[in-house]
Length: 218
Length: 296
Image 1 (cartoon, each protein chain N blue to C red):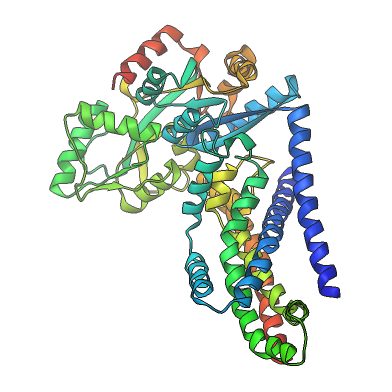
Image 2 (spheres, rainbow over the protein chains, first blue to last red):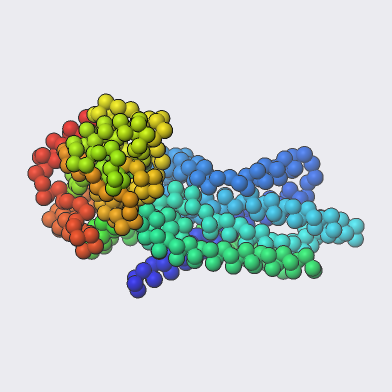
């Protein structure tokens, strides 16, 4: 029982670590991209935005398979030796949540632009200064988008299973453990793990909601 | 100003994570050899492999054995792509295909057990104690008359391939029949579905025993016949760069110690072992059976 408790704890921490890494990676390119999309107001930027909107519902197994074929020893990036490592899961999840981040941040920024950007420009600020003002005003919005992305990364199964391989003590995360324990017939353990996952994601969702409400009354 | 600071911190964090991960990978590849083994789910889910790896690591602390549990078909495909160093599978006809392609080599039989045909306790097709091929014929007849169903794995796994072989030997093709349910899932799911539908299915004995307490509607009806022998083999992978260590692991599981672990595994929990070590049988005889099965 002691060993089981430690293993569940290790799996939970590993899940949080892998998904956090994924979120940080995704943020690093989503924010600049959103800023660029917000700065332009033409057909191309609208098309790109629609493209990302469509990608929000990308099935995780499709992404997992594409990534598997890319990272496989016989694939174009096989030489990196990333397949079946935690980093491979993080990369996959970061790609998975990028559309969510870009969509949420861009649409939020666009709303802010009409209030903040125009005002700042009218008051004589440079475009760079106006960008900074946007970022400051959009902090709440960013936190909300980041939590939503993190939540999606936490609960996905396809990518973690296909490019992670569900290796014990290495790439085994909450969702893949649940799938495995089901196969083993340990329904009770699967339910406990499901409850942990549910608690984590519910907490995050409530956090998003409360931030949303605070944001609305600002 | 604080926003810029935030951005710098975020950027630094990304860099730190990337560096840490690289350092971690470098560190592990320096100190330890990682041996990747693709294996069938039925073997992994019993917990036997983790037990074997644990003992192996005691003797070779510098080798980390990592298992990737998939169907036999996928396990061999991963070997072809060069993503694993070793495969543990139970699908002789598929194994032969990949042996001929030169993907795998150096095969050793390390364990065996039996497939069983399970079905509803009332046994509407009357197959109890029949010869396996005869039993399949009876199930087909009963299915056509509408009082029996059959659940198939449908996933190119070792068990699925054996089931197809049984149909072929019976000279029948149930594909597309309304009573023939292909579910494309692992063994445990298949058994659960068979239980829900009061249907027949082919299962490996290990998975059936693990689940038997939940399978209230089912019982073992056919368990005799050479065609039901389930042979587990280990193979080296041509594309692997860890050949030396892969060989060490195979040698371990066929050694006296490895075979001892296999023969005692599951006795406590189920009152009988889940697998028989290859040593307990006449290895030549097993090889002959393997050849027979590989021909399909």
